[in-house]
Length: 70
Figure 1 (spheres, rainbow, N blue to C red):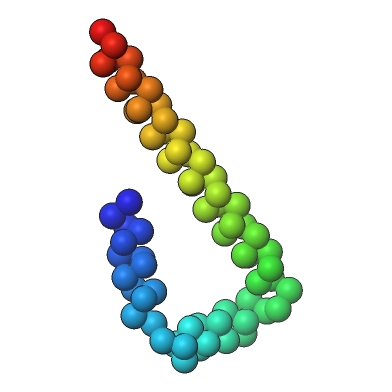
Figure 2 (tube, one colour):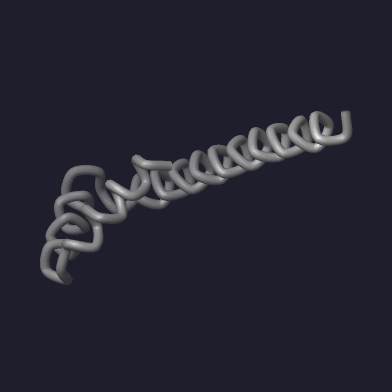
């Protein structure tokens, strides 16, 4: 979770022109046809990561509840 703070800190320092420049470089580098595929893959990866972290958190909470009842 600490890494997410670093990423958000980096992104919060970017202005409109910097984001536009990054998007333009991505468009030139990958082309218009590849960008939706990359975005879909990134979205699926983020979703799987969130699901995995939620499962781990739930397992930890469940084990803590079991330990409390003993």
